Image (tube, rainbow, N blue to C red; front, side):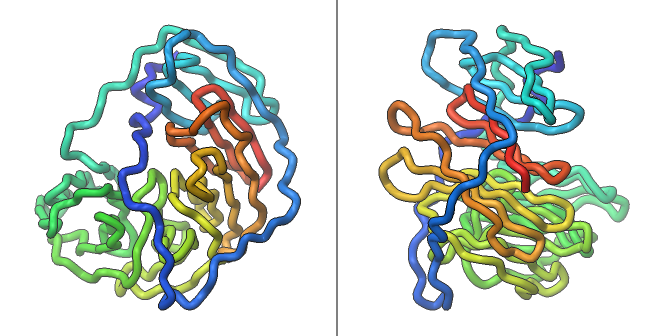
Length: 299
């Protein structure tokens, strides 16, 4: 069983402010209210420890669906059936990131690190550092490379820098989610992000200019917990729907940004304070919630 450190960084509680309404956004969020899809499977994992849930990571999807938490240890499941294929109940908590590290990138010949005060990159043309002003306070997403740019979300501002020398290229209008997975590059070379002006809305961004190339459906969301994009731009987003601390849902969007379905997470026994995780792979959405439950839904 691989070490839990390979499963990803710990999912901390969201630090950014709740999403606010914005009359200038021009589109009201739609609560579609239709019948949610039935999961292909759901797995309720047996607890390996009696203490309260203190950390959770995953899902990570490769040959298996890998999740880990203080409640279940590290577990691998068959992506088609949900059957447990490997388990390490004593897996240690993954090491924390440095206090000032928001995200890392190793792709396209670049190695980048987003800190609270600067984005630092090294590549074939040398190394550079670009300041983040003001310094990140409420969370960041990225970095992501696309079309000769390196983009980040810093305190809900989407900003891009030239990959070669770190020149600031643009700041996109509006506000964007800082949740894990909420910034990505698609197979066509466009940036994909989750706009949070008055709801949660997937958007496609031209990396050279910061122009919004396409906007998807906007759905109600108080907080964006997590997101995941497929190479074609299809997405799954986990949102908090109100202030009850019990009504969270996974919303799936097609590559065109149209909402496909909404699946409410089963209500927890008390307040849900840990961040659910989500992944998209091979036409399916995998969600890990409450540190013990995993579900697969068809995208």
